[in-house]
Amino acid sequence: MTERFDCYYCRDNLHGKKYVMKDEKHVCTKCFDKLCANTCAECRRPIGADAKELNHKNRHWHEDCFRCAKCYKPLANEPFGARDDGKIMCGTCGSREDGNRCQACYKVVMPGTQNVEYKNKVWHEECFTCFECKQPIRSQSFLNKGDDIFCGPCHEKKFAKKCFHCKQPITSGGISYQDQPWHSECFVCRTCRKGLAGTRFTSHEEHVYCVDYTFYNKLRISLCYAWFGHGTNVVNYEGHSWHEYCFNCKKCSLSLANKRFVINGEDIYCPDCAKKL
Image (cartoon, one colour):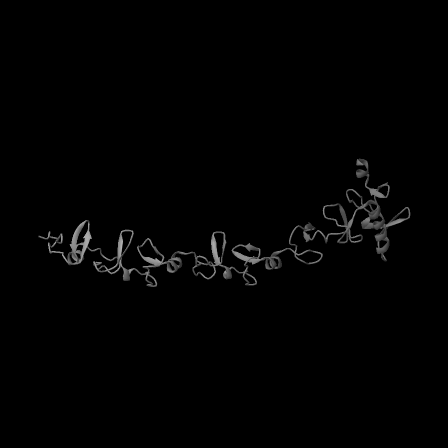
């Protein structure tokens, strides 16, 4: 005599019939669909014994119901992600929903695409452009002014100080004289072209000159000889002549025209400075 083989719930004989093992119990398909089947998280209908079931984090779906919530692409054999709100999305849609957005076009910067990150913000590579010329920065160096980004040439053209002598931008270094910027290589003696950056120099009528001892004294005399004009006030002493406004103390620059002075070599000093020598 054959041993009985019944459904745990309805007690129908299962010999020669399809059945399901549920918690180590034999269950006929009818009872399984009615009493044991999981509910699909998408369509809310039971997932019957004949259906293919997919599971993720204690949730269940019919195979055909397991789709991207955004584009409805089937995900049974595709990578996917589960959002905090329970929605399942394919990798592409998930990146679009949760990914960083470009600061220029506000579209999502997809993973794996060329992009630029700066100050915790991100741009598509083609959107990271110079504020002035509108060209992509790409691998060039750049500078910012406030929230605006500039390529090197445009920043230099727009913001760099211009040399008082050559009128070209000063990109690095430089010096300031009488509140005017100069390239170091432009700040030279007007006569001998010697560089004056970081050295002592003198000026005359907006021109600068080195103070090499012999050269300067010869220059001083020759300049005064060359620039005497009709009606110019002149100071004469021992065969040399000066404009009245050039006849100054070498140390304190006090005008010595019509005043007492002291000669030391070829230099002229006021009495007070002469005492300190």
